Length: 273
Ligand code: SF4
Image (cartoon, rainbow, N blue to C red; front, side):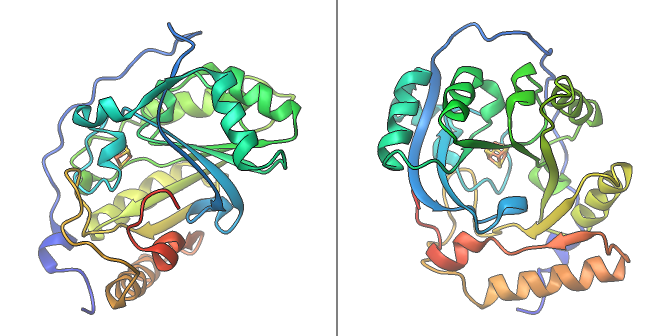
């Protein structure tokens, strides 16, 4: 396959409205909804690609992206598989998995911004751990300023979700609230078609000071589960990456880093690696 199909490249899906939530000072609960904690492994995407990390994946998301590949951390029918844990219990698990040797901890989801990670981050940083988070930039929280690295990954039109620039700006503002602790921020765009790439470039152009990364989405994925079970990256992944290089060059978008999903090349669709 040389490129994605013409239909998938050119179609914009109707976008449902996502309700914006207000910026709040504290969460109502100290318990965090956890879908899985695993590692050490490596970060397969974005600014920290290749870095050893543990993953803390939360349960629950305010979005329903068409090609989400972590439906088990999003959909309510999986809720009985999620655990409510406090920061102390999560950090104990982190220390056990890492055998007490500090490394990056990646907060993922779902949307981890729905939770309150302030206590966990501060506990971990005191012991030398660094905290990275990825969120779609729909919800901002004051504790973002505690993070060491934040990947804002707005969801493109092909997901069926509607991007709100104001949400992204609020996330940036939240990071900037503590000037003594700068957060390393990057933008990551996961795209399915040409319209997504044009959309992503427009957002990146508004934020030229923030490093941008782009990668092809897994078009075999869907919220309800993968359409095909793929054990390892195959020729289609390579073709998607070549297609993405071709499209970004055609747009003269030379300030973006084009990356594969490294973990798919190594472990395919396996969960917990
Ligand atoms: S892709 Fe991310 S933002 Fe979209 S539904 Fe899945 S976890 Fe939520």
